[in-house]
Length: 74
Image (cartoon, rainbow, N blue to C red; front, side):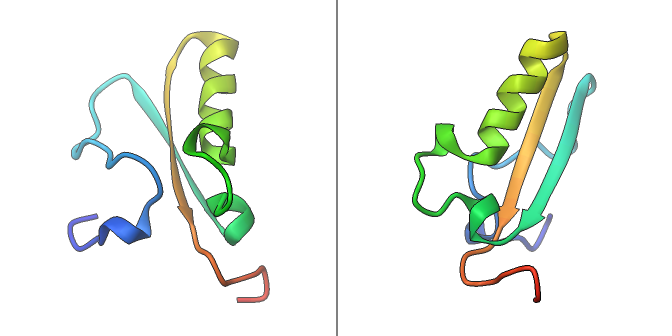
């Protein structure tokens, strides 16, 4: 993460180092993962984070590294 540009990650920048008690998931993918036309709260990463937290009450952080303009071939 040290050389990351803000455009590489959709959403809030995570704390580095990761605080204890948080489980992180990293999503990689195309514009569907990025949620290019969606509000932040409607993205796959935000919805997954919400669903996991509701499921077991643990603290989850889902990082969205989706990229617009690419597909599964790249």
